[in-house]
Image (tube, rainbow, N blue to C red; front, side, top):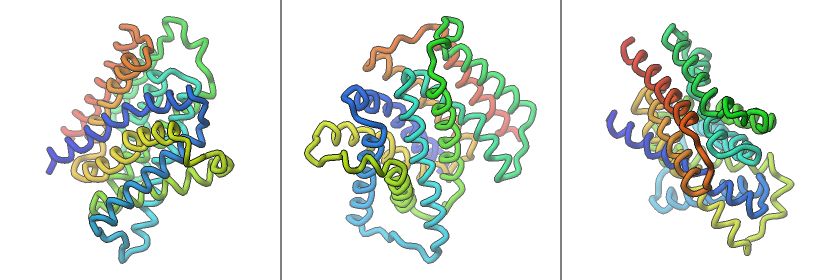
Length: 291
């Protein structure tokens, strides 16, 4: 069961790493943050509900509280999309993903608040290595920090907060429910959220705009459907910290795809920073495994 959980979380995390490709292309064609988010979540909503109903899975629960908790957890998916995609409007894909990856140490805060798990010495060492990795990965040495948008930085960090919440609560809420059940209701919660936040953009979405639907469809698949479905199935089978470690695969996947497809330059210094972040994640999990 543990191996199954590892594989599911790895696939979910790697899938999310391709999200910037579609989002950046959407912005290049002039689509707004609201348009991309709404159509993305609508497609994910329709896909998951279609699969659920086709398989005739039970979509209700004796406990209405379970559904409310899953819906609430789903809002973290929507918030991550809003903040992360918003950051991509101002930052390179490689820097935006690095800021998203602050979920590594933010996840410790969630565990402290909700599980009462106190950070120890190794946790703080891991945090320092992570921050050092961010220093190198953001290419401050190369002087790029001067050109970095403060709005982009804030949105990127907020995406880390919401993503940490998604990973944490995915492994805490209604674990006895089937993954498809959880994912369907999670995306439903996310869809409701983005419709409320971007209500003014709904009228600008047209069914005949094929390009928007294709781009948003790609975002929906790699950014909502696959991650939520695979995390819902894998996270309950492993520890929260191990889920954080496995999610690190998203970082190199996103940066490599940005280099190859978006032609974003990434220096050796930045790769060294990425390596430090991944090492910090593994140190954190190694320590937790020994306690």
